[in-house]
Length: 111
Length: 112
Image (tube, rainbow over all chains, first blue to last red; front, side, top):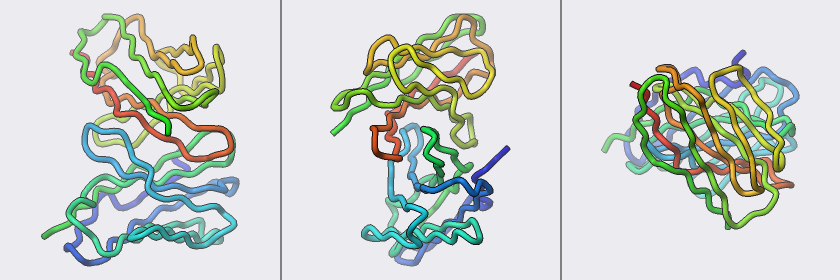
């Protein structure tokens, strides 16, 4: 049962524009959410996280928004850069030692 | 800061052969350790996690096993590999008081 869903397998965006990645979850017990970035043949790199007590967290070009009532979170990347081309995973935790991951969204930043 | 080592980086094994993948961590003590697998074009599937030496929790029934003989060592094993065991295996750690997991560089396993 997929508790974290990333319904867009891919996203193409022009350099300098905004990238918006979406993630939906079904488990209302999730209280911590994370985004990871992954290049081919490498381990995922932690990007940014948000606790359920917040609705927004910002770190440089990356902002994560959380809508608890809709069970939805999004990652905004502004401005998008060529080095942002990668697979992005959304993950969620209910403080039980484990993370549930989405299937990932492949972002391609066009020059 | 913590460092995660995984080896080998790439492995090609015949069907029916044994497997041993090792993960060691530095710069932390008593971490939670995890094994994930990413099949081609798929997301990350949690295979095992460990909250301490000798403590292993299995997430999915499969052909693999895990062991934690030391605080900073996590081993993934199989007695007989299947074709379906091919994938990218990732070790991760989580320190107490944090929900964030940090990943190692991964091992690419191809079973032929």
